[in-house]
Image 1 (cartoon, rainbow, N blue to C red):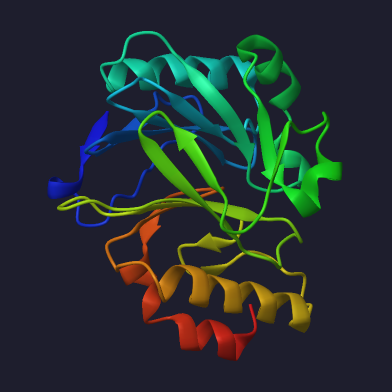
Image 2: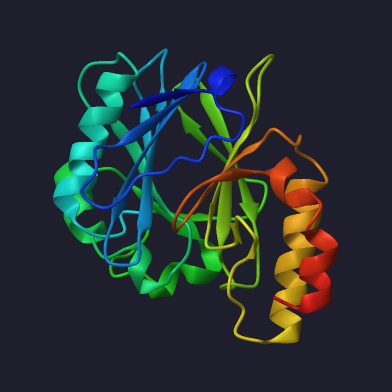
Length: 236
């Protein structure tokens, strides 16, 4: 199923385990998602329409489903065969990289991860990501945004918006509908994460920015913005 921004006020990006992928039309790009694993992990593929280049985000589980997602995403973008140019892991927690070794072996794509989380991956990374880095995916330029707190090296991937097309933020476990990621009741980690989420996402991106989290359905920054004071007050 392909969702259109013009017909979806808040693209929920809803997909259940064993469902067919969902695709979101972002003009020069297509975002494709499938749910894998018992924790409803989102595996995402961002495909450049102009070149067919693909960025896979979080090979979380079930390598067969993840590899099938690459092929389905290529078809949805009208680009023919799958062509992954990189695999990014948003953070080092085990449930986000269980299929990474098999996917890397099958695709021969380089593995990218936030610098501080690199040692938590099951295979060595080919590139360590820092805040402000850019990942090129064909003609797309994807910004790396560190969101420190859920893990020290958590990163979000932001595709800037264009005229008439909202930005996209793939946020891993750092931002969800209803709050930021788990910081295990550690006030310092919570403050770090919420400060980064506010200053690096909410303060610089428009309300129509699509948020694609590491588990469950998506949201937009506008749908969550009014709850920021509540999140800070409650501490989670």
